Length: 236
Image 1: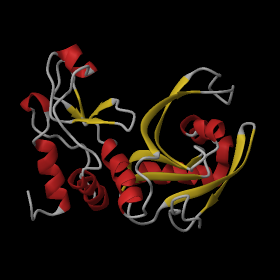
Image 2 (image 1 turned 45 degrees about the vertical axis):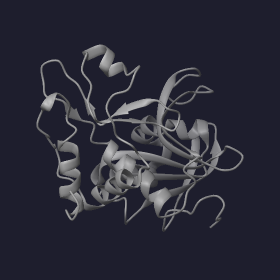
Image 3 (image 1 turned 180 degrees about the horizontal axis):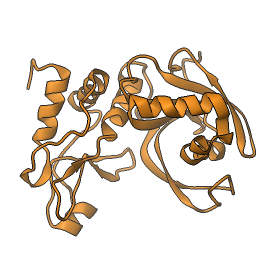
Image 4 (image 1 turned 60 degrees about the vertical axis):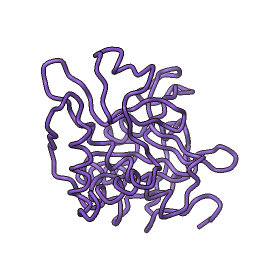
């Protein structure tokens, strides 16, 4: 696949890893920035994709594996594709900009790859707008300061349009918006220093990034930044 442009490279990469020999189906065309950074993540070894390993829940359930498994920093198994009983395997397309954003933070901005999470499950520590203490939720990625506080939170969306819609709701209404309250309620619980909303088409440029300030009860203030902040050891 050497010499292919990024979009062709990623299409070939994914096609070779669709389980059960199914053809690759893309609901939306790949964007150049997600393809570039996903390719960088794979070629650098930052994310390693392989056959399903022992203990894989998908392999146990379906009796069939695939070459699309990768591990989170905590060693938990995730897959680029989902199985379905009567349909072809479906690409978990949000992983592409998600992985791409993580790759850009580490490979371009110099974030520490030993201090981040991916697809991390947590429980709410207190009652909030919709959620109650003890309820489970998942965050896309978190990058930590040396004291384990969250320096940068990544919220991944499939498309630029989805990312921009969430950003617009933040800027217009904050947590008084039902959309913001449902999609970003965890921000009130975790109080990250910065929040980066990413989607295919807004990973490399036009970053939708905010400083999170004045978290108080069920409200918070978001200040839009001009660029993605550097890692915590390179204070902006």
